[in-house]
Amino acid sequence: MDNINSPAGAPENKRPKRWKIAGVILLSLILLSTAFGGGMLLAQKNEFIKRASVAEANYAGQVYNKYVTAPANKLTADVDFNLFWDVWDMLKNEYVDKDKLDDKKMFYGALKGLVESTGDPYTVFMEPKIAKEFSDDLAGTFEGIGAEIGKKNDIITIVAPLADMPAEKAGLKSGDQIYAINGQTTAGLAVDEAVNKIRGPKGTDVTLTIFRDGFEKPKDFKITRQTILVKSVRTEMGDDKIFTITITNFNDDTSELFKKAAAEAVEKNPKGIILDLRNNPGGYLETAIDVASEWIDQGTIVTEQFSLEKKNEYSHRGRARLKDFPTVVLVNQGSASASEIVAGALKDDGKATVVGMKTFGKGSVQTLEDMKDGSSIKITVAKWLTPKGYNINEQGIAPDVEVDLTLEDYNKNIDPQMNKAVEILDKK
Image (cartoon, rainbow, N blue to C red; front, side, top):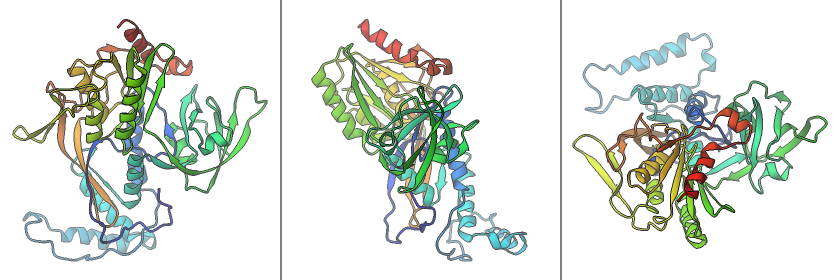
């Protein structure tokens, strides 16, 4: 993650990358905020990008080629691009605090507005600082204390400190209530607001005021932020012989970690598998296909539709090591995009029972283009269809068995969705 005082540009000779993304904009979190119900996590991510794009930042360099004539065929006849510079000059000359105007901030703001004019919430321009954070998200690396946080009984709470990370080393435990961050109360704070206050560059300190059962009064914990590497795949073999695979994102590390998880499942030979995709906002298309291919051994996994005439069908990749294990896929309103591709494919192919709540409904395809200054643009180019031709976009994947997880359940540490998955597998 960029230091706020570091140059925002990138080397001129950096070659642009083109990635295919099957996910919504990811929160550049230092902690993973756990949010249940209502698609809360996804809504927060979109709102974060809006706020971060206008956050105060220092930009290096000047705006070049300000009055260059537009290349031929770039503009239609009724577009007078001089209007842009008329408005630019008017602001520079007449705005009451014109000495506070920043050329780079104005320029990136104009590009952001240009991209937003599409009306598509997933077509986004990211200035260099935000583009770097987005890239870090996909890589699964962050700078912070290394803990999942959520809200229980209206109090910001540590869900789980990550192993060997600063939060755990400082003595934080699951269930700890965060009363204050650097002396400022957390009363009334949303989860993402608390995350933004706790986050920060590695090597800097944050003080959390913590209360837990057994404390006579809240205590301060001073924690030094570090680079956090978050693994996107976790596994657990229960005493009931059910093997649970949790995928938090479809990131850079997911394919390799999931291959290992599949091999572990085969070795342990469970009576059933639970694939937990709840609150998973998506990631890479290729990774989603890799995961689904561990169950599906024939036919199409997902179709990418550009228009009625043009489409790409992505087939299985032949491994299917898990095809003979009874499987339940857990989803909720926060499961989006790549998660929906996997859930939809396993459901259509009859390889799994889908349990939970209807998914987010983010079935559009984005390509990510890196620009030479370090900024990037994510553009919607197509839509996703399940193997049976069902349009994921704005409709989502409906579960075979609908089970909600309410705030009351969460506060009581009850997980009806997981319980239903176990019940289904016990009957297999």
